[in-house]
Image (tube, rainbow, N blue to C red; front, side):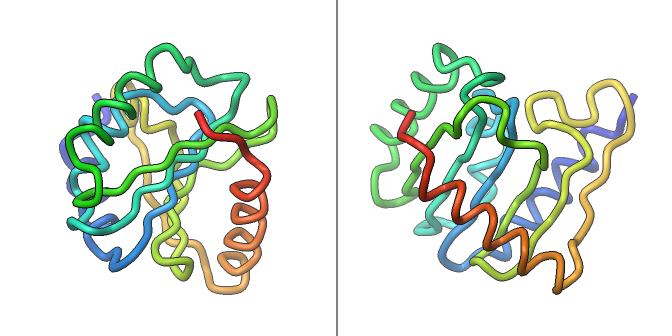
Length: 143
């Protein structure tokens, strides 16, 4: 197996570093991002989920996001947006618009069947990715 608990711990450590905002980018986003990973971010940190309208199933993600908002409101703010079809390629976590972490698999089934990695993106590339994904976020529509 792919060390699913180890990955859970690593992503938890990444999300725990957030002070204001965590942007999670994953074309194949599913409710597991809310059940397993988003709660690992500190309270008051805004969670933004950016996913692809082609690959994500809104019928599973939308109810989970609605329940999250209903329960947590301002304690754990959440916003979910969909990009145009087939726009997303990377799987990333961007912390406070400053740190970028690349994920080698989708969070939907991260490390379920094979080893997965969470890698820090170097500063020059991180700056480019932050800019690109903030533009995608600005142009995406609400789930």
